[in-house]
Every structure is written in structure tokens, then in C-alpha cells.
Amino acid sequence: MEFRIEKDSLGEKQIPGNVYWGIHTQRALENFALSGRKVSWPLVRAIVMVKKAACQANRELGFLTEAKAVTIIAACDEILAGQWSDQFPLDALQGGAGTSTNMNVNEVIANRASELSGGKPGDYSLIHPLADVNLHQSTNDVYPTALKVAVIFGLRELSPAAAQLQGELQKKEKEFAEIVKIGRTEMQEAVPLTLGAEFSAFAEAVARDRWRTFKCEERIRVVNIGGTAVGTGLTAPRSYIFLVIDKLRELTGLGISRAENAVDQTANSDSFVEVAGILKAQAVNLIKISNDLRLLNLLGEIELPKAQVGSSIMPGKINPVILEAVIQAGLKVIAADNLVTASAVRSNLQINEFLPLLAESLLEAVELLTGTCQMLARHVAGIKADPEKCREYLSHSPTLITAFLPVLSYDQASLLLAEWQADRQTSFREFLNKKLGRDLVDKTLSPYNLSALGYADEQNT
Image (tube, rainbow, N blue to C red; front, side, top):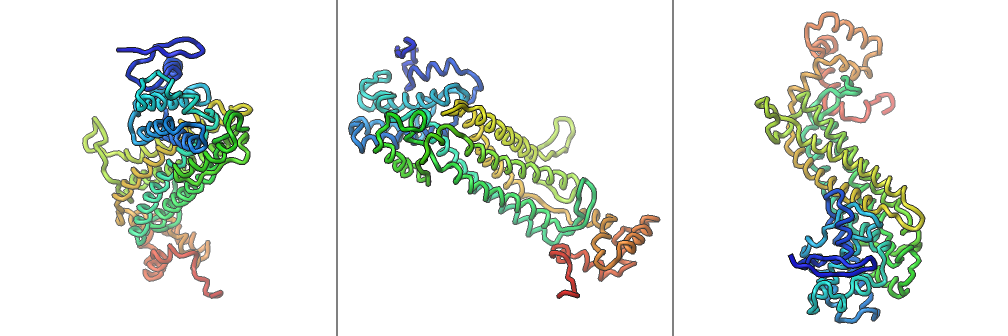
């Protein structure tokens, strides 16, 4: 392999001749061999968008020549189109508050722009990573701004995924609306309801998740681009500070705005913590729904789609593997919330030096939830009900008597229950048919009556 030599204040280093990154990236590659997981591509893309917006602002204000700006923008466009993704090899976990990632992007853009200008990688006389690509910027305003942009784009993919899941659950709610079953509380039989009502609770939980996801964007629309190192805008001209946000808003199509207090937005990460908490709530709902579906499948009241053979030793065994995967993804999102919180609480004074861990955790949570909602929606679409099994549990459940309390006293209901339990010659429902009359039993246990809000109080209607 051929190498080129680059220099920085620490000395010289060999850089592979066929790469666009430079000495800072090379040092970071050697320093941060940690997780084996690369910096999130959505975050890299968002940083490139910030670089392009900054270049446009600097060109318009005359701080960059037209020739330099054209090649920098061209290099940015190539990356945004999906080229050169292999030029961003850094580990997601790194010290320096994201400086290495920012410099990786600076170097790749500069070297590719130099090449487009007729130069070679490593020759920074044409386009310089700091003097040109990073002009009027700092990692401390570029990285948090780009992270918010990346998260918003991710949330905009998560929202329709949640809507898809909500829709499938609502379809099952309607499909199962007439199936009466026994409810359960504390792992014990409780009062009856419909299977449709049970699925309506799933759908409503996801509907709240969808609304929360939409509201998340409001929490992170305020960005600190233009604030440079600590939010004061030191070394950046005022004209640039006001223009760069317009360029970034136009480029991303997002409703982002410049922070009135950029010192605050540079120092504090609580908005990310809030978003992570909202994502955790969604994970909790997905886990709860998956656990409930596993139980209903175990009871035989529903039948899950058969995804794959379940055992290497037990022929014919089919496991609820999709739901198990959902639960595992949900647990990772909950863990991500803890990591975002821990990263935010450990920041000091004017910056959060643990943003790389925060960014990796938050973006992974958004990505996981999006894929999980899509996977679970496909699975829910194939769920079937077993009305006969539902009726079987219902007919034999002594808690059925609770539904008749509007027409029986508590003592009368207790006596009937005790009489049935003494011999159990028939199902409890058949026993009630004989004692109370089939018409009353059918009316009381009808889907309409069980789905109504309370019972009709004839004295006050």
C-alpha cells in the first residue's frame, strides 16, 4: 500500500494513499478502537449538511471564493448522494465531544474538493479542512446541531412506522369486536370484555406513542449553529451567524431555528434526555403489547403467525420469536435512555464532552423503534382469533357472575356462585342460563353490553 505523509502539531503520520481522510482521522482510528461500531451514517450525513450550509453562507458573504465553494459543495453533494461512505471509519465511541468525527468530515470534504480542483489528497493548499471547510465553525456547534438534524429525520421515519402499527392494531380491534372473552388481572380471571376491546388498548397506547414522537421534534428544533466553541459566536462574523441557520433550514427542509441563547444550547443536553425518555415510553408499550400477545397466544385465544421453526430438538415447536425480538429491542431502547441520561448528567460547564455516546445511543434507539414498529405491524396483520377458545374460558369462569351485579345483589350472586361450585355439573354459563334465563344471560354477555360505557340506569334516563 502506498502512503502519504501529513503533519500536525504532534508530528508526522503516514496516511494510506487511497483514502480521503487525513491525520486527525488517522490518529482517532488508532486511539479509539472500542466498540467496532462506526459513527452513525445519519449523523455523518447531517454533519455534511451543516458543512454545506456553512459553505453556502460563507460564499454568499464573500468569506469563501466561488471556486472553493463550488468544489466544497460538490464534495458535500457526493457524500449526501451516498458516495464515499467508506471514508468515515471512526468508532462511534470517542473522546473529544465529537471533534474526531467533525474533523473526519472536514478532511474527507477537503481532500475530495481538492481532487475536484485538480489537486491530490493531502495537499491542503487548494482546500483546507479547517480554514475552508470548518470556516466559522467549531465541533461544539456543528456536532450538536447535526445530531438534532439527524434525530429529527429519524423521528420522521419513526412516526409513520408507529402509524402503521397503530393501523394494524385498529384493524384487529374491529375484526375481533364481536368476540367475547374473559378479562384477566394479576394473572387471574377477571370480568369479561371483547377481544376487540383488548386490542383497542394496544392501539391507543401506540397512538399516544405516535403523538409523542411527533411532539419530540419540537424539543430539538432549536440549534446552536453559529455559536462556535462555547455559544458566544467568538470568531464567527454576525452576518454569518444569522445567515447559516437560514441556509441549513433551506437545505434540510426542517423547521429548525437559531438559539437565542446559544451558550445554553451548547452547554446543556436536557432536550436529548427528554426525547430519549419519550422513546423509552414507546419501548415500554411495545414490550407490554408483546408480552400480552405472547400470553394470549399461550392461552390459545389468538394464534400468532408462524414465523419460523422454533427448536433444534423438538419437532413442530413454533415460538413467538417476533415478539421476543420486539421485547429485546425495547430493552435496548430503555438502556439507551439510561445512557443518554448518564451522558448528559456528566457534562461539564460549557460543553457535553460525552456527546458521542449520547448520539450513538439516541440514534440507535430511534432506528430500533422504527424497525421494531414495522416488524410488529407485519406480525399483527397475521394474527387470528380463536372464538371457541375464548368462549370456553368465558363459559367456565366463575368471575362471569360480576357482570350480573346490576340485576343481582352481591349476596345473591355469591349464593349462585357457591351453588355452582358445589357440584360443577355444567359450565358456569349453562348454570346461569338455567337460573337466570338464557335471554338475560345472552343480553348481559353480549358484545354490545360489554362494550358499552357502564350500564343503562333506567331511573335516570
